Image 1: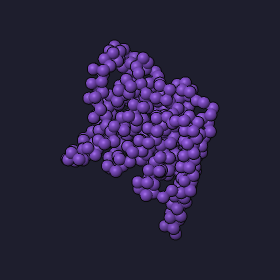
Image 2: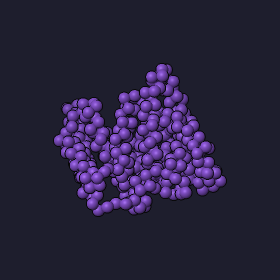
Image 3: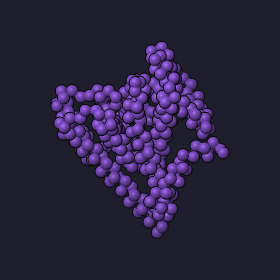
Image 4: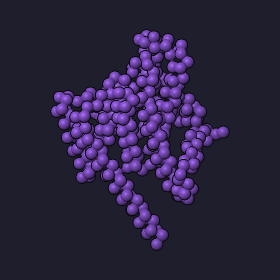
Length: 340
């Protein structure tokens, strides 16, 4: 079996699974573009569900702390990613990209977003078991709104009326929460304030998601090992002496890479607007998990401020649907003109 065939095993398997769903007419009679759209939606849903599972994962690994779970996740994810790239024959491709960086300035520029990435992954594992699950989920809700603002400020992108309305609702919602609590959670601010910077820096660098992930994890791996050996040896002893923990951590690494892989594949298959709308599934799922399974506190007074933020998100979704409909309409007109 060739490396290119291996790299598409998962996608082909999912395609066969989709064919068994109650959509045979759309899947078999539809165009290649329609099948790609269905596949992209399926991958996006699967990705968001996997991220939801990962959010609650740390609660199943007690007595490991949130920080210890984060350390183990980084190592498990690094091993799973290396394994995937070796099996698929793509490791050399990413190494060649990195070999093209020859100056210290280029490497410094490449590593600049890494601390943001690591801090976000730490918060993702730490927050659910430390009473900050709801606040972190809210940060992910605000993330796309912040991306809109960053795009306007840094790239000169023009905002539509709906986008301005979305930003306004979110601003009032955050403002009302600050007035209510006399503060705003640092977890919320950290997610929505720094994660856009990470994505923007990677975009400016022209580094692909998998290459950037490989760099981030490889840089951190020695520090993670040092932490386990010198700061938390009890964690190392606990995991190495338990078959349950070993299997759980292997699963953590595989799920992490699978979540990232399906997310990246979905982003490449779907139109930007559709992908953007699908991304709201994750924070909604995180929010529900934080309140139900993880038992994080939620006060009824939060409904007003959070409701305004969700109104802003609804405006962005409507904006995305309108753009998608317009693009589809222009595409049909263009095909009709060519046919004529």
